[in-house]
Image 1 (tube, rainbow, N blue to C red):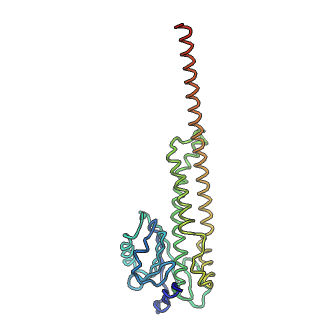
Image 2: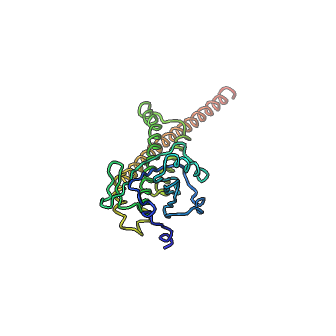
Image 3: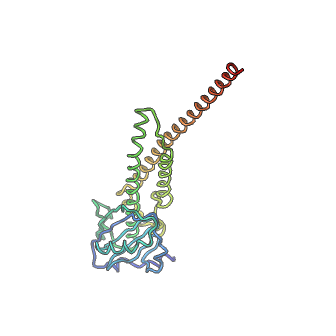
Length: 274
């Protein structure tokens, strides 16, 4: 009931507008939403506030921001004001854009980057924001995983051509740590495969969410990302195992050499000094 009392009807605020743009950004590892507690909230879970002259912003703790109907200068100004609340901001900001059209007779089906909505209510903006935020997060980590693939490809090729594993174990461990972090962030923080809590209170919006989820292929992209992470993890683990085996084999040879040297010294003392 507390959440419902904190929501203001967005249709009344957006009266007279039939077309707006939504832009999503993945800006940092974390956003300190406590720093916005004093701001008048139009919606919670996710947090929706007003910004600019007539715009709105939805913020997610895991570092995504979705801007509705902000002018370019207003976008820049808001993102700059947000900097003190960011933890580990990204130098490269992933972005996604969607156009919203008011159409009470539509079936709310997204087509070619445009979605017709029955109204511009807070709840519908939150649903759209949730989808866009998850999409930019997936896009960011898809690009990160692609870079890791480019890095480990020469390692696998070297193993195939020369039959030797890479000798820098620390870098292999770093790749393993990176894949584990990406998996933890997408599953633990962002919960890409989970529906927003808002749908528990507004189940009639489930169809809108499902259509947007299909449009942006969130489940398929999430599964694809997990498969790539699993492949990277298994590839790096294999190289690491080969590296450890090679090191163990070298140690065994060192021990054999030392034993042979010790035997030779013993024989020398017995036959030449005895």
